[in-house]
Length: 309
Ligand code: CP
Ligand code: NVA
Image 1 (cartoon, rainbow, N blue to C red):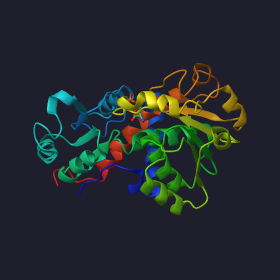
Image 2 (tube, rainbow, N blue to C red):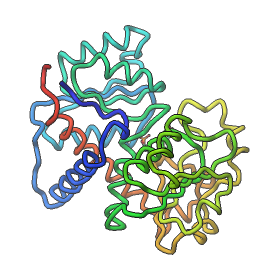
Image 3 (tube, rainbow, N blue to C red):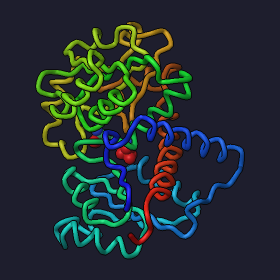
Image 4 (tube, rainbow, N blue to C red):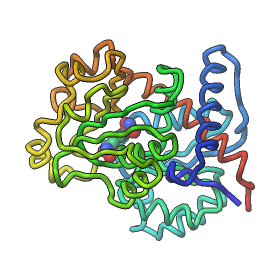
């Protein structure tokens, strides 16, 4: 038996709370200079079909801090599904390494990898979801607010992979989640419907950024053009022109608002530089917490998976 980290929707609230508690503990231990090496002798394979700064560095650094090692596999190294099938790659990796993190274009490739691997597979971002990001975001919100209870998150921009994972998180923690997006850029319909049924009255999709931002505890944004959508960037720049987090939007949110962005940011597009670098911004805490949250995920999955099963 092995447990994967594909979607926050696969876990209970208690599971995710336990990952967040572990992440907090790993963070304070690291800062106190206390070494935590529960994964000595374990290896993480890292399959990346897309570029990355944060995800790659935090997984590589994380496994090393836990006592393990990593192997980075760039797109040209394995050519996922082209040089050999995803299933064959999964079966081979399962004989050598103990964990896999994969950043794929298609979510289906990640599911296929997980289906054929006998070791835990971790989602490092797909076109559909980015749960490792949202786990670190939840850790950041808990740190800054003390708890997630009653929080209102306003996401301004594209109904993309980060939004889909936020919808799953909102359903788990009964958060109020408002997305302001232009028509045609709504999140995945199935994920939205599931979240709305699990958190009735808490999930809203609107077109007006000010309406979404009104009194919000968190103002969140992401790039208008995600990796793989580059051909649409001109059309997207036009569609999202009014969907910028700037000082005016921050003013309509709660006075203690946390400004969040998963990064990389396009300064002057989805967010102004003064807000990104300003006193309400917690974007570097989010980036830092990727390290701690993902270490928690690797430990959590390893503890619940039977090696070699
Ligand atoms: N936020 C995030 O996943 O960053 P990278 O694309 O740099 O990994
Ligand atoms: N939505 C973005 C997130 C990057 C971390 C993308 O998929 O490119």
